[in-house]
Amino acid sequence: MPNHRVLVLYAHPAPHRSRINRRLAEAARALDGVLVHDLYETYPDFYIDVPREQALLEQAELVVFLHPIRWYSMPSLMKEWTDSVLEPGWAYGPGATALRGKGYWLAVTTGSPEDAYQAGERHGRPFEAYLPPFEQTALLCGMHWWPPHILHGANGADQAAIEAHVAAFRARLEAFLLTPPKRHADGTANGK
Ligand SMILES: Cc1cc2nc3c(=O)[nH]c(=O)nc-3n(C[C@H](O)[C@H](O)[C@H](O)COP(=O)(O)O)c2cc1C
View (cartoon, rainbow, N blue to C red):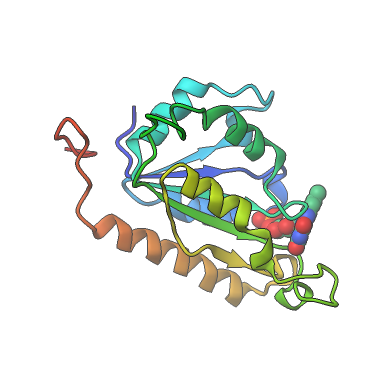
């Protein structure tokens, strides 16, 4: 089992066409203490190894959900992962403590620019109006909801905007990795 403090769940259905998410995954992969877990690469048949996923989650203090927005939500494999891995009695419900206290960081991109997300425009409401299912999933599991890292207008983003977005992502992860590791119940810490 790798000694990671941060687990990045990377879900891109067409990674070879990605301009932004692939760059974010690469930036995270370069950091010690971060495990980038490419779900589409690992599970092309959508058959999720639940015990393995739960073990990876237990090891992490911060879980990053990295993916493009698809139909106002997550890509289908990310949804399948959520449906399969976040089991009652383990992730939520009476006696469930596996995810309690871990950070939940949503890192997403939209094709449309931010101004398309408002009343009277193409998407009808602010982008934040589409986030409650994500946030409530985190809260139901006892996780801390981090302010999401969002790049709107991803398809038209210029190189400077992409670089700034990647740099901010890396800097936030680096800042987290500088904090003291949390202890596990048995007194050990990741990497110790
Ligand atoms: C099937 C599909 C659904 C999409 N749904 C949305 C959407 O609901 N809102 C949006 O702003 N962009 C949507 N997009 C655009 C993607 O979010 C965008 O291409 C992606 O964020 C770009 O990131 P990348 O360069 O890493 O691929 C959709 C794209 C596809 C192919």
